[in-house]
Length: 510
Image (cartoon, rainbow, N blue to C red; front, side, top):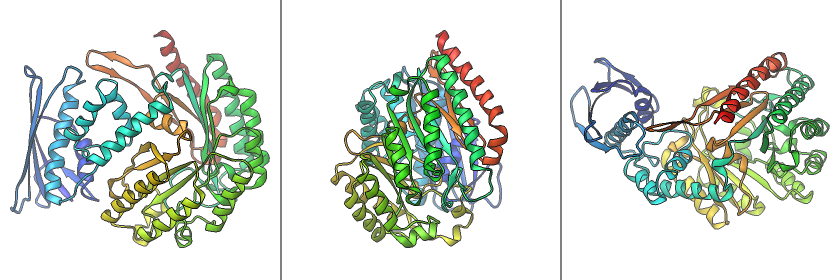
């Protein structure tokens, strides 16, 4: 869809406008000069009245060939706490564009004008300035979020503050992410650093040697800075792809190096692929008091697992779950994916029925996203997925099923190109919410990423000004490929420590 976008009274906002259009059309190209091959002409007029603290806009959508014209108008009164006119104009543009494109396409957008990954972070920021009732009303009236999503968002934000009462006071602690980049095979939908552990993408032993070194250097910095660790999360890849002995050695290094080891609130290991779980690895995790593991079926339909490249069986998932239970693991998460190729309501119900027989303590329900670099996206024509209406029904059915089983949503996030413009939701039984998942999504503390493909998110102190505050968050990614990590981790860890020093020296001065 090629859209000629005519701007009157403002410049910029191209990215915001593109994301709104992308909600309605799979392929979008915005152009800013008249063109004979444009499919639509959208004219947006923005005006501001600074004496009245008002921003307002008009929009007109039409086809160059003639036909029906769609219009919308919206004005935004800036409250005393409104941060900037820029933000008000952004809301005006989003409101008007959503209205005319909804009228033109007939598509309802459950999340309204919200296109970001972290709507709960927005909700928390709103709740710091307004009552919950006012926040809910703003989501309905200004962001055009539908009632089911409003209630989901409000419920999750409240629950997170119950689970972590000091959520907004954890910036003087950090969490640690350990990236193990190996898997038995790579799934078709995956873009995480995941290399065949049997392959030649760098020696596993060489990678682990570098990871031990990175852990020691980071632990030394944490001791010198006297920072506690809130949570530690082993991800990847599949951490349980390495041997029990290799896992144990990493735990030894962490326990000897990280300060306040006995005060870490949560330790999680993703044992996502059932074909990597063994008794000796579970024994290692028990030895080191791992609080939480993930065993991820994604689906309980064997044909689906074969199609997406997960080389384990449904029976293997069931057996490994039961093994973990028998060996005393009492906090198990399972991941499911809605909208996998060739799956509809029948397959979903089969997966839910099977999950009901196991009842893990938490359940993360993903909606399939066509990630740019995945094999599935590159060969999209080879995979048939559910239509928008069926995806919505599957989401609704899953939400109802989790409620019946006693699960409560406690964190969520969204992704680009997610089917049906939906979301991923983490559900948990009371007391089994993942602290790391909340902290990672809400960006309330620094996450230090160690290992291959791990991304550090370093928070700098908030800078207050008359319109509110701003917070700088620096992403620092480690190399994704094991061979490159092995060659360059020392250089990367020096740069990372320098960035951490800068952030925490600023914090110390405040």
